[in-house]
Amino acid sequence: MSSEPASIESLRVLYQSDDYIIVDKHWDIRIDSKMWYEKQTVQMQLQHHFPHLADPRTYYGFRFCHQLDFSTSGALCVALNKAAAGRAYRCFKDRTVTKAYLSLLRGWVEKETQTLDFAIGKNSMEGKTHMMCIEGSEGCENPKPSQTELTVLEYGVYDGDPVTKVLLQPLTGRTHQLRVHCSAIGHPIVGDFTYSLGADDSPYRMMLHAYLLHIPLQPQHLLVTAADPFVPAVDPKWVSQRSLRTVEATVDAVLEHRKTEEREREEARREEEEEEKRKQSKQRRTEEQSEEQRRVCQEWLSEWAGD
Image (cartoon, rainbow, N blue to C red; front, side, top):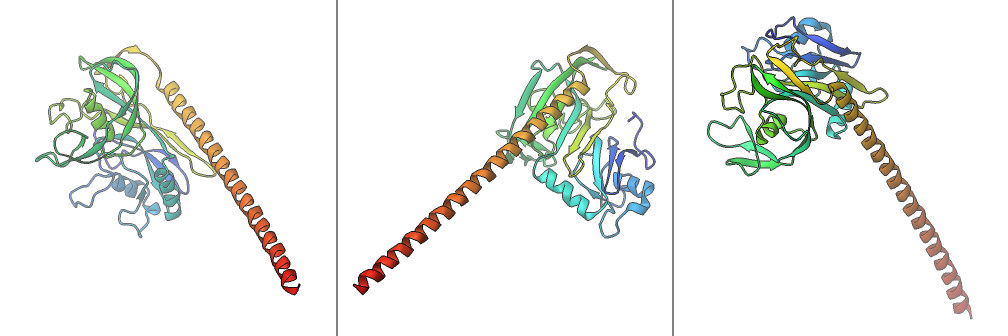
């Protein structure tokens, strides 16, 4: 990832198999578009680099397993056939996918670890219908529960202004969720032109990057990381002044916590299955006992009638 604008040639592949390609999406580029004037999209990059993999039965030629905003960079999974797309879709639908984003936020976030819990809805205010908003704000329609885990990594400055480098883990998947949640706590994402209402326009990009993507496919999980772009080598305007924890250690903790949750879910599922088996066995015994009682009763009635 660099500070140079995207081009058709600038496609970085993180992973490739017969079923999937995971790319490191550039900032300020759409995934796909039906607009004739959109000449640079991830779809067009894939068509340029992998024309033989495009599926003519689909509108865009490639099946994108999830979405990233125009301004967001990072790991993006593309399925190369319908069956692979279905398997990935089920993981996203069942919320077993783990995603984590790196970001630079305005100001210094005091609380080092926190859960941002704000319901998010559509903004119906004039001039803001392209935006989302939190429940309770004016014009917020149909808000839905939304949670994000925030972990502070480093404190520093960007172009002389105080900023905090954080890891964001969305627990739900609402539109613009991370951008809205960070704005809600008074620490908007650096370079977020939309949610700063046009005020934060000096950075060359919005500082939000999809760093980690883990899809628990069977028999082999997909696990990729897209290199951290918020380092002085890429953007010297970012200067770290105090480091609390590394990205790698924090991500390892996220994955370990997810493994623990998966084990607990699996154990709970097995217990439910065992309980269901016990119920069915008990029901069969009851039915067998009832049948035996009916048989004995019928024999007694036959004998009585004979007498």
